[in-house]
Image (cartoon, rainbow, N blue to C red; front, side, top):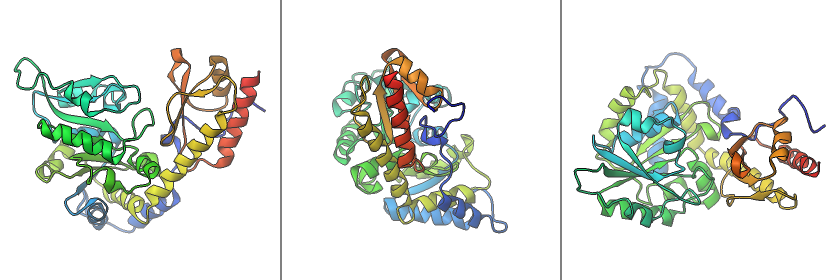
Length: 348
C-alpha cells in the first residue's frame, strides 16, 4: 500500500540512522570500570595515536560532541577579532548553524554564490579586495564543506589549489568534514589525500553521520595552532567529561577502514537510487550524485504523496527540489521499495 501511517525508512538524513554494531561494541568495551575524565584515559590516548596513524605524525586530533561545535572550535583557532571567513553561500556554517559563526565567533561570513556548492580559487581571489583596508573585515580563513551541502565532492587537486590560493594570501584553509568519509569513499582515496596531503590547515572529521552515536573530531595539521584547542574546546562547551566513549567510537571508525565501508555503502545506495530514477517521468536529478545525497526535482503532488509515508526534506520547495539521503544501514530493498513508490506516485 502506497499510503501508510508508518515510516518504513527515512531518506531525510544520515543522522536518522542508528549506531553501527561495531561502534556499539567499542562503547561497551569502554564501559568496563572507571576511567579518568576529560580525556585523560586510555581510549582517548588510543584515538589520538590513531589520528596520527591515519593523517600523519603532525596531525593532532581532539574529540568533540557535535559537528557545529567542531566547526566553531576549528575556526576559532584561526580567527582574530576583525576576521572574516570566505565560504560558499550554501555552506553549512552559513545556512544551518543558526548564525553560530557570527554570534559565537564574532566574525563576518563572506559568502560566494556557487552552482554546485564548491569554491574555486577565483572565488577566493574575488573576496580579497579589502585586504589591508581598515574599513573592512579581513578574510583570515577559507572554509569549505567536504562533501558540500549539495552532495558534490572536492578532488584532492581541487583542495590543493584552494589551499595554495589561500596560503599565498596569508589565509588558512578549513574543511567542514561532516561527510569527509563519504568524499574519500567516492574518490576512492584515503582520508589523508584530501586533508594532510592537500594542504588543509584544520578540519573536522564527522562520525555521527557515518554510524557513530555522537562523535566528531577536530584535526589540526598546522602545529602552531594545536596548543589552543584544549582551551577553546572547554570554552565552547565541547569538552566531554566521559570522553572515553566518544574517543572509542572515533577509533572504531578509523580502524580497519570501517569509515570507508560505512560511507561506501551509503554512497552505493544513493547511486542505486539515482540510477532508478532515470526512467520515472517528471523526476530529474539537479546535481551529480557524488556521495550519499540525491537531489531531484519532481512534481509537488508526487512529493506530497511520498511524504505521507517517507521522511525527507524539501531543499527548495519553490523549485520542486527535494533531498534524499542514504546511510550505512540503508539496504537495497529500502531503495527499491522507495523507487517503486515513487513510480506509483508519479503514475497517479
